[in-house]
Length: 143
Ligand code: AMP
Image: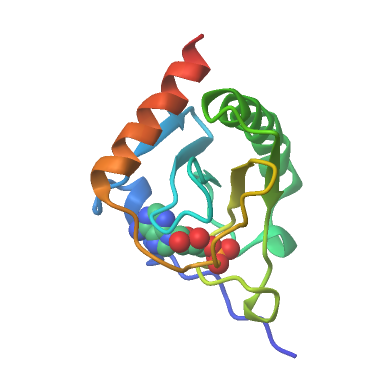
């Protein structure tokens, strides 16, 4: 039972550095939120810290303190923007638990009654759809 070290070349660091594109929804000194490219439901977004850790297990608790209010703010905005009945907040630690990108992140997924979740890391969404959904979320945050 070994845990690998944090890899600074992971894809979310490339997003933080602007080396690969993302549909940003929210950013502050400590945190970035952007659309998941393979959404499990419309409006699925990810919240990441700007500080590196592999996941929750090795995160600095001070980083978590900065993140949780942002996760809450985005969950409220996602529920409003997508007229959702509920919101899933999910976070996976290590491959055995379903983690595929090894930089701490929280999934925020608006849910509607009777609409099943699509598979985790399933199908790539159209970029235009992601851009429109990011805009809806930014508008909800601003309202
Ligand atoms: P996890 O499996 O919890 O580590 O979640 C990683 C998530 O990152 C998955 O839901 C992927 O769809 C998503 N993802 C992977 N690459 C990107 C990317 N370049 N931009 C946005 N989301 C991504």
